[in-house]
Length: 171
Image (tube, rainbow, N blue to C red; front, top):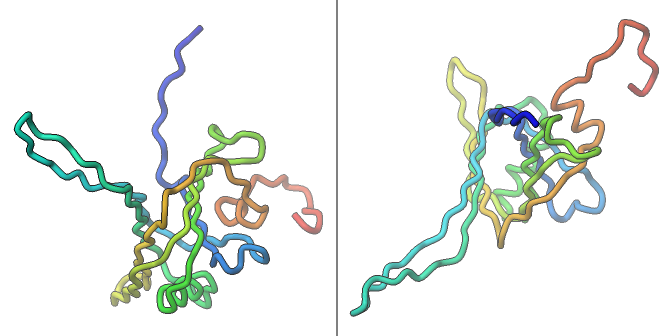
């Protein structure tokens, strides 16, 4: 059996979706025009010097997601996130890896977390797009699993190939 060649994971295939936790029963998660994000995990390690040598006291896991996005005109997601930062509302976040090679049935690998935005910045350079920068602080521990994207979410990520024949309504 031939050994499978390792392939690089593309950052563009990892997307973030957000939803106010209060809307979990009424709305699907929504995308933003993100340009970059970083999912970080850390924990404090305290060194305790004893007569027998140094031992390590392991602290609790801390996770956060730094977010950079382009601000869209009349963007309800950007407005919802800004309002959540201002009001201290709890959010849900999914990092979904939209990669056909990793897809299982209709589901993609994902990380799910709940937490709060601890900052909100709107950059507005003279020669650049207006941007959004924020930092999502994860409460408790992120969960790993598989997520299903709605047709709307999937088409927002990448349109699918269409034939040259007329498109039926609803496609």
